[in-house]
Image (cartoon, rainbow, N blue to C red; front, side, top):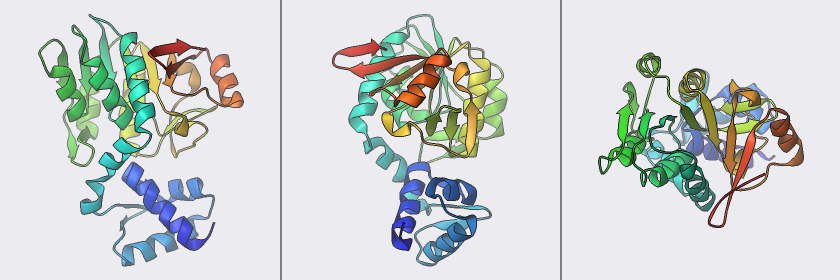
Length: 259
């Protein structure tokens, strides 16, 4: 990969994940951490990003649009996944839902139902589920990230410990034969907390996440009950999912179909 291409890819990854460590970028781009540090220094000098110790973040004026950009990526697939996942849950059930563009699409579809209780760190998801008064929504409070409309940090983790819902519904940065992964430390901590406390875990992930490693591991595949996606995983990942007992639900046509 040429220098200019690598630096543009760094900016694309930051637009998707908001902030990343040098280690995560080096792993994603298959280069050395020293090379990444030089790239970050050059991009920071051009005001394309802001460095912090061990990584980089988009400037605030750019970060505010990053989540909106993620919402437009693979939009059709995310919408189909959300529509397919919503009927899997019914009245009387309780759900953790974490922050993400795919889970936001899921929440919009889920809001057509009544009698659900949702616990989330996403303002947008809480607004969807509380609209109309047919469902209960608990918004976990903590440090607020304006760009993604989410709360993170130790206060969120403390509040998670007070719940033990039926389900955790999560989106992830990547899914491999080794398990689920994410790029953001604070989001990964929240996802792990939800996985530990829920009785059943459902993952919503479009096909772009297949085989995609990330720095922070959330759990192994056996911890997952269901994966809802729009396309069958590649054979090695499909085999790993089957071996772990994960039900794969494909969103297609008018509703979900199982493999």
